[in-house]
Every structure is written in structure tokens, then in C-alpha cells.
Amino acid sequence: MSTYMPKAGDITRQWYVIDAEGKTLGHVAAKAADLLRGKHKPTFAPHADCGDHVIIINADKVVLTGKKLDQKMYYHHTGYIGNMKKVKYSTLMKTKPEFAVTKAVKGMIPDTVIGRQALTRLRVYAGAEHAHAAQKPEAIEL
Picture 1 (cartoon, helix red, strand yellow):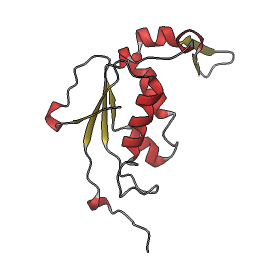
Picture 2 (cartoon, one colour):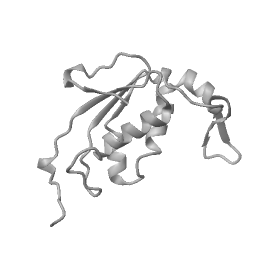
Picture 3 (tube, one colour):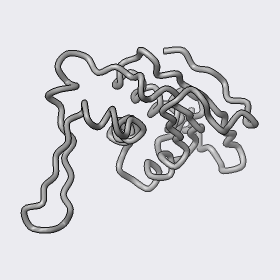
Picture 4 (cartoon, one colour):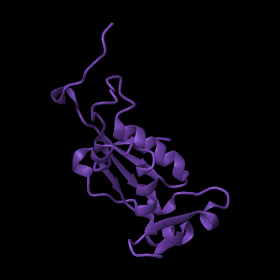
């Protein structure tokens, strides 16, 4: 038995939409990461970019369990000495829920060239409307 090597012409990309309303952040991010990498396909190969496009809607209604909303922090450094910034997830979910969901998905994708290419196929929207109806995305249930 030989290893399957997908070619660029053999890869077909589907569009999926995930409704995050009432779902936990980790479950939504894990499912999106699997779809972006193509791990749900029988033709998956870790060295090939064979993932699909993913649209996440209702990012502002995603749930963080336990005390994560008040205790979990987002840290980033500006590049200047002593300028480590931190923001609580309660503030982040009110101001930029799309960023919080994107960051969760990014943490579940490998930091490689293929992972960065996969992340470009992710679209996150705070509300229930998205601009990709022409692609006829298939709804995914979690």
C-alpha cells in the first residue's frame, strides 16, 4: 500500500458556515481548524494544503465557560520596552469578538506556511449576516 499524495488539481475546496451562537469558543475553534486543514477529508495529507473555506457567524454570542470571561487575558507586546498590554476577555468579547474567535482558531493551526495559508480561508462575523451567500456554504452542526 502506498501513501496518497494529493496534487494541486485534485484538491476541491468547499465552503462551510458554523453558527457559533450558544457554542463554546473551544468547540467552534477546534471544528473550524479541522475544516481549514482538511482533516475531515479522506484525502488529507499533512504536507498538502487541502482544507476548505470556513465562515463563522454570531461570534459575539460565543460562550466562554467557567470564570474565563473575567480571568482569561489577551496579552500582546507593542515592541517598546515595558509595553506589555493585557485585555480581559470580557472586554475583548464586547469590543472585538471576531478577533477573539480568530485568535482561538489560529492557536489550533500549525505555525507553518500551510497553516498561514489555511488561516486566510477563515472569515469571522459578529452578526448572523455574511457576504458569501453566492458560494452556497454548507451549514455545519457542532
